[in-house]
Image (cartoon, rainbow, N blue to C red):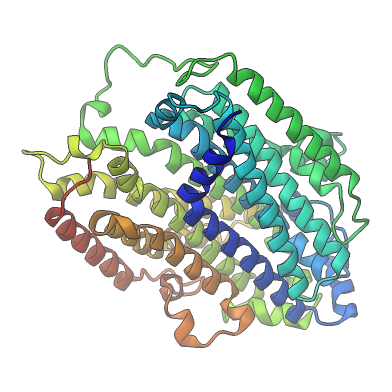
Length: 521
């Protein structure tokens, strides 16, 4: 593995900005979540009431896992936000691992590097070290965030270690997927599909009598019971499994050709269908996987949220502070306030999908595909429209699917379908703030490609303020900085035309800037 250290330094330099964003954002979210929990349930009696109420809700257990340590600030934080943090950590490790291996291999970088005095297994070894070190640092940062928020030492260290092992395991699975799949996109789909299946298996195990615990890697780390027994043995087993997966990835790497995978790419149809014979149809086809992934995530998430709706009054009754915070999301009933919160969360998810799809413009430019489109007689504004259309579809479809799932979950669990239309309409309204952030991402990619990272920073800051603003009692001017604050509270379905105007202005600015700059490649 000659040259592993050199390649590790190279990968650190190439990915340091992306890694820094994850290393800052995730611990910050955990800290903010823990602080909000501490303010909501400051006394032991209130935490006991929370445990008694929330620990019995099947939908909450499906999302968060078995209720353990709910009499502590850290335990409630892990129960409320730990599942989301675990998914984000695993996803970050998968993306980092694929980018460090198969993405560079597809671009031809590893072929050039391996022509020198670099061992053939050095890229894989360097990528494994990069993922491992990154996840260990991330786990340590999460532990420090919990400690800073007032959680106890043992549980904080256990959850940080569990987070790190989850990231390492899924990072190694991604490295194996990079050897098996035919290209980087297929490897991402395979690894993220395993993550989705793991979450589903974990939820089924926790809410039924089916013994599926060891079928999901997420259950392995969860078995350490942070803020409960703090058992290190499941984490050791997880690390051992990660090591075995890495050895398997090395074995597969030694038996495949550079640029190829064990699974050959499927040949396409002999002729393109009517949709693919048009440029808009081609772009929709290329963005289809991303659009559907965000829409399916919205459907699963908000179906679970909808099933909680009939239990909102009992949940709010566990603490006056909880009822007060719920009321901050709407001045109607507690049920309407919870639905308003769900719709804000839906808008955030839709904005994430719109941003991801919009940034395909930057990805195509970096890959050298954009110059083939931006030539006469196709004018630049029409090229930009080809990327704006999938972004628009991502925002609207995610809101439609998420709103429909929320309405069905609420109606089916409570056997009351009277609010179905208003919930679906309220979900569609949330496409407006999502379009603003998607248009901002497209404007940055079109006018200032070096600054596209700002799109995700603005998205993260807006999401944090929208979700935690009422809990942290932020001043009104701070909340007004996010587009999510300019949508009427549920059950109002008034469309925020001002946001649509802002999105249109951003798209006009994107078209103007795109027409005046050179295109890389």
